[in-house]
Length: 512
Image (tube, rainbow, N blue to C red; front, side, top):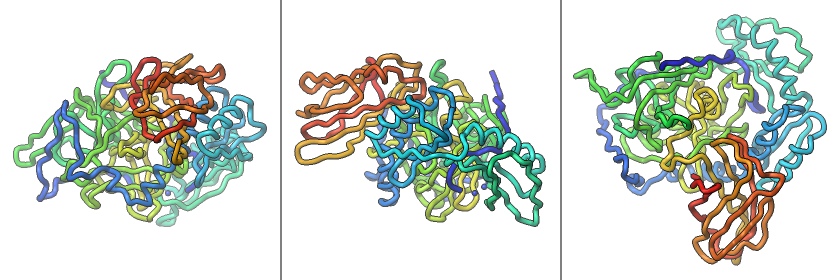
């Protein structure tokens, strides 16, 4: 059945920092392109020539990205508590330098305060007073958005809610003398900022299972596949990409031969969301990896789950055209603006001043990088303007399409982030964050087996039991619930070598 999802107009964004190009082809395969040699469904992919994603990212950028892992874990623990209650005085949350900042108007309620205390065992969390709550900013933005959207030819093109709760920004692009509209009074501090209007942006031959990062098109290449995904309830497979790439009901191909006008059929576009610029292409073989190297190599990274995104977070994108231009991913993309009301794109900036995306990158994978070279799905490319970058986050795609998740090698409803926060000659500290993609959990137990003689000596936020190398951690009374899309954390000190154990099992289910 073909369905089309609709949402609120694309005009309201939230963030602390401050820029856009629609990325659509057509793309033609370079004359020197070699046919791809994808791995079979049962084969285990190995890095080409020993290279992995970690080798393709500049060391300084890679290290900054990996250092954010405990910050993202801590932010998710706080976000889970915020989402579980009424908005109250919440203004925003983001990653600032080496810590997490929560902006809040008024007194922090006890449940959120408890979450902040818990999160501080994982990473530094600062609570800062806000002038306005997110609820107040959204109410004011609702008055401004119709005026900004009314005339597409005037200078104003976006309404942004500041994550720090200090007010609203209206982005204007005064090119060609475009007039600036008269804005209504809202009772909230509002200022205009000059930001170039983004334009939409639309790999070579591939075969099933279809991984993210491949060049796709109705005939000739025009866009990039984002991620192979599956519906959690029905187990039906899709490729997630950008809605502006093509209409509902059309066939999508790889390996199109312009001489014979034939190609390999992936499937048909069966669902889209125009306002969120996302689309699902049906396929019985969604892949669990993304291409991260050049257009003509097999360097890929395994997808192990998905992540919420926060202002200040550093990400990469692996569009098909950019892969051909630079031979690898575009990284050092710092999230600037992120909406919480599902009305607009997430905006980011390429911090080195380089092109953030190119024509043909649309729909391609946007992701965070794990210390072992695997990745988490963060979203799909939509727009850019020079270093300015716009993408749709994966969490919103999940909301739009009935709880989809990446088609990981291990199909699981949970993910574990295991971060060694400190180590010394005889021991180490660990922060563990458990993410739940499945139904809400009320009462949990996480188990693993240490690979050596490690022995837990101290712990917090969990009830620990260890028999030999086998460790089981149960919930405390105050953290027994893990809502869908929520996270809970605990930690411990242990003797021995800080080797990461695997697998982890949550209530008997093996986690990514």
